[in-house]
Amino acid sequence: MPMLLADKNAVIYGAGGAIGGAVARAFAREGAKVFLAGRTEAKLQAVAGEIAGSGGTAETAQVDALDEQSVNECVAGIVKAAGRVDVSFNAIGLDEVQGIPLIEMSYDDFARPITIATRTQFLTAKAVAPHMIGAGSGVIMMITASPSRIPFPLVGGFGVTCAALEGFSRTLAAELGPKGVRVICLRSAGSVESIEDVLDKHAGTIGMTRDEFIADLTDMTLLKRLPSLADVGNVAALMASDYAGAMTGAVPNVTCGQVVD
Image (cartoon, rainbow, N blue to C red; front, side, top):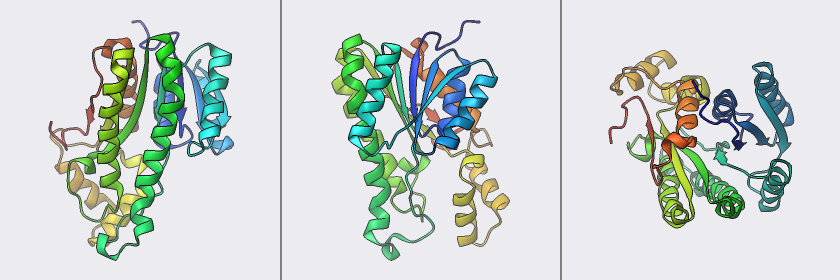
């Protein structure tokens, strides 16, 4: 079976994190040369080591995805070394505060994830788009979660953040589509192994154990399970591939039916 991303070059921001790492591993498994970008070199090296150990190709770079110059230099370096960037995936952390009612939260805590997410997604898309336009192809990807569509309480600014990114992805797709560049925004229900602190916080707020809270979230899904990190990586690889070449402005649903489109 041919690899989905053979001969593709992909940059993953936040590649040292749980989601970014899962996406990077899936991209590499499917044949992409991956460029792992993030602020913590040790975490990036750990993911790169796993990829190399499985026969993949990965390079790392310390990048502040909130700093325009840092992002521009990262993209320029990849283009110089590899010739082009075929896929850009941004999964950096948002530093959101959850578990507190909105009316008890400071504005700064509410706005922080919105500001971080919109800034980094804008900067990384802006940096790579001209190169993709020049090549006549490319895929810009981001990720959100179920609170973009389901009004969960006590998620602070996170739900607003997710809705904002989905709106941004559609507008960006409308502008870049005629130039051959696709924009895809995955929506996940949250993978247990990546959000343990958040699960503990919400469970404690309503007097449940983590397992009880996970059971409630699971019961909300049609498949009666939550998506794993591997699920997210697999769907990301498919969406980044030419098999999804007719898809743009789309929000692929990786919620196991927690959200039904």
